[in-house]
Image (cartoon, rainbow, N blue to C red; front, side, top):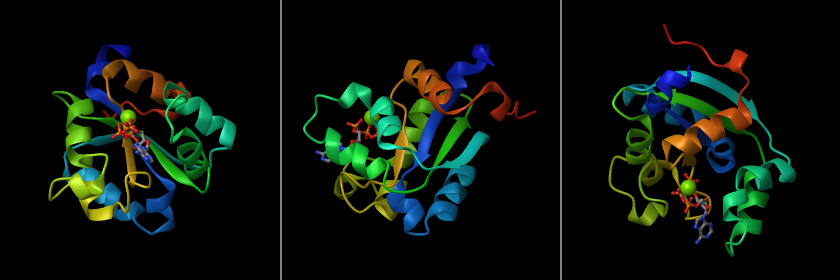
Length: 146
Ligand code: ATP
Ligand code: MG
């Protein structure tokens, strides 16, 4: 699997979107966007697990709000594959962090409510994608997609 890391990214359907009944809509967008789902599960993070996942943001003023929100309900974690660079392709499909600035046709434009509750997460680099996949998935939970 490691040799294909460049084709993998990590995504989350965040609690606002799951609560709002948008899970199926987001997954449709992922499949229609040409991604292969290599791992997928519904989880409900504890506050400590959310703080661990977002540790890179711990000095940001919104850290408390963000980790409380991310542990406020179930979310769907995803390992996504796309040839040619999954990280950028998934961020392009998500749209801008602030949904009011997201392009038409993006997931955040369609499904997100605010800069904090913005429906989806996506890794920002191949290195972080590998770390984030490993944070949530064991090797047995990832399929080869063959
Ligand atoms: P993500 O990492 O979730 O894919 P992103 O890379 O577009 O989103 P980051 O700058 O990494 O954005 O911020 C991480 C998350 O923190 C955002 O997705 C959002 O949920 C939250 N966030 C970012 N900026 C703010 C803000 N100004 N106020 C409240 N929450 C924010
Ligand atoms: Mg980010």
